[in-house]
Image (tube, rainbow, N blue to C red; front, side, top):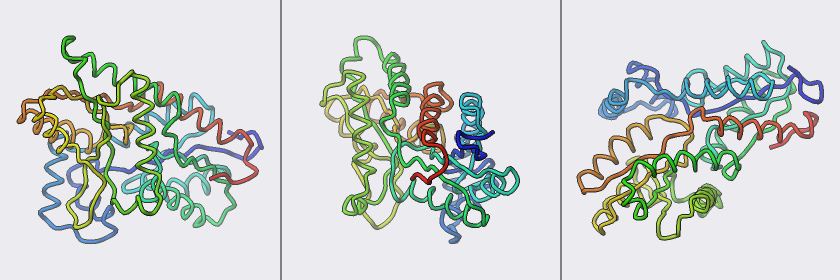
Length: 316
């Protein structure tokens, strides 16, 4: 289907990717690690995490459901490309451009917050894939959408549902922990907006839920074991600290993600929950948006805004 300028236009939703069977774990990790060999102990550790969440990542399936619903809403073809597993961004872009004749692409990452280490990588992969086709393709890349109103309302709705799972008498004492994937702390000195955008999202959600500043905190999760400092505080440490202070009713909202995957289903639902229970805390996790109508509507708004001026000039 053509866009407003008559150029054949489509949307590309990009996500991290994840293994779809336990046999995929080793090649998936090799891809994530840039081709470097993965220590056998780490392979087994990751394989066990996936075994505990059902043996596969649901990320591609969820993203494809979003794409189907978004396509119905915007009336344009919507494709899905993954950074670290099939279908790879490069392969999907080649199909879009060379087989389908797409000449204008709206690129959206399924993470609302920009960092050069995350969304910046998706943008680079997209541009490299287009360059490899040798065709002239206009790209409207959406760098961030962390304050998109429909997105915020969808997350707020999920959080309200989680609040309702606490006994009525305990709700006024619930502390909210907004979480996102940690990144190396060095990005702050480089002016990367990731931390600032996460705080803006957290404040916007706190306002929607009438949370006073003493009732919420931004923390980080899933930091790997390396020798460099990572953004903190880590959610596990915060859970223990609050529990020791007698604040044992905790709602976790993983605002750095929109869909279920291992860092939610294992890192939060299993690992953090076990830590909380060991310290006498009751936690509830806000459901992920997945293919929630508010997320689809938010993405549709992003597409329409990106194409507002047609496809004559590149927008990034």
